[in-house]
Every structure is written in C-alpha cells, then in structure tokens.
Image 1 (cartoon, rainbow, N blue to C red):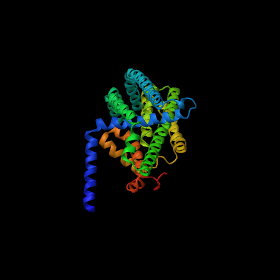
Image 2 (image 1 turned 120 degrees about the horizontal axis):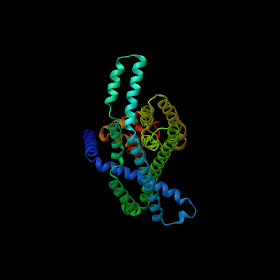
Image 3 (image 1 turned 90 degrees about the horizontal axis):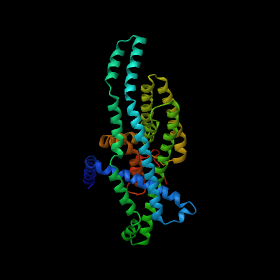
Length: 343
C-alpha cells in the first residue's frame, strides 16, 4: 500500500510538472491575477479602516481598489515605455563608448588580449541585449487581457464563495472551522504579498532617486527592474544592481559611475533587505535558503525568468497553506527556515 501511494505521488508530481510546462501560457496569467487579487483585497481592507469610506458598500470599495491598482499599473507602464524609448535612442552612444574604453585599456596596459575583448565588445548588439531583457518583462505581463479576465472572474466569485462554503459544510462547527482556516490563510498570504510589494516599491523608489542623482539614462526603467527583481531573494537584488551598473559604465564610458551605482544601489538593497524588510515582515518569509535556490532552479527550468520571479511567492504561499493542514504540516516544516511554523 505504501509503495502504491509513493507511485501515485510520483505520478501526480510528473503530471503537475508536465501541465505546468505545457500550460504555462494559462497558469502564469492566472497566478498574476491571484497576486493582483490579493493586493486589491489589501487595499480594500485599508479603506475599511477609514472612518467614512469604510461605511460604503463592499462592491464600491472593491471597484475603487481595483481602479487604484489598475491606475497605478497603467501609469507605471506608460512611464516605463517612455523611458525605454529614450534608452533605445542612446544605444549607439553605448556602442561607441565600448570601443573607446577597450581602446584606452589596450593602449594603457599594452595587452594583446584586450584587442580580442574589444572585438567581442564591438560585436555585441546592445539593442538585442536590451530587447531580450524587455521581452522577458513583457512576457510576464504581456498577456494583459488574460490577466484582467482572470482577475474579473476572481472578483465576481469573491462575494459568492462564502455561500458556497456554507453549502459545502452545513454543519455549523465544520463551517466555522473551515471559515476560520480560510480567513487565516487569506490574511497570511495577503500580508506577505502586500509587505513584499511595499518593500520592493521602497527599494525601487529610493533607487530611482539615486540613479537620477548619478545621471543614469532611463532611471524609471531601472527602478522598475529593481522593483520586479526584488521579488527574487539574494540573486534578484544582485542582478538588479549589476544591470544599471553595467549600463552606467557603457553610458559614461568610464568605471566611476558604475562603481557609484554598485555602491549606492547595493547599500539601498542591503538596508531594505536586511533591516527594513525583516522588521516589517517578521518571520512571514519563513523559507529555507536552500529551498529558495532549489525553487529558483526548478521554476526557472519550467518557466524561465518568469518562473524565477514567481518562485518564491508561490513557495511561500504553499508553505502557508500546507502549515494549516495536519496532513501537509511535515512538508511545510521541511521547507521552512527555522523548522517552526508561523502561527
């Protein structure tokens, strides 16, 4: 019987992986819609605490919260598109600065290998490099209509779900238990997504002013990239710092601006990641560092960069859900950082 269960579990895992690979165009927008839905719920909960606004009907608060989130996304998208257009115009200057830097280094150190590095740099197509970077971001948020459609149905399902739950559990005690359980999971997931989004926004916002002070082209684009990659722990912060630093060197044709970006943006990442975020989130991100890297690798293989961006939120949500059920608590403990579940 035990062997049969192991075979069933293995087959289920294989099926899940295959479905995730071949249905990613459906699953990824749905996951994004769920994340946006939780953010809308967080905004609505904040509105409920306001004296007069909180007395309005729930559907009005839901509509207003949705419009606030969508308005922010449209505004951010417009600003980023404008910055990308400006950045694309400066690519020829970057190309010229590469030649200038490699020639200067070759003349100063008189090393033959620098000519090879120079040929390699000359052959780099920064337009295609930028295009590949943008395609990754647009692939994550590209299917806007599908995400909005999922989000619409989630919002329509939200007021009906309590009635369905009550019909599923006619016994008052069982209904109360399941209702409390779902409320607890909802609070934990919403709290994590809201606080992680807040700390990522703070990191991107402060980094924008730092990049603006240094004089980096398209600071809004780089701040947005820092905001997105901040959802990937450790590796994301490193990549988000290296990208603008590399382009700072290409823009100015010298290493000093790149070092400034590494120092200032890196310091911002350390302060927010090691001081502000732990104080705000506490032990919400109760996930083992080993599990973080494993999930990054697994979801990266399955969904590419999109999977890496979504890997930690997905894993944290799974830990929160599994910790609430006795049968799956051992798995949650195994994935946790401290071996203790947040209560």
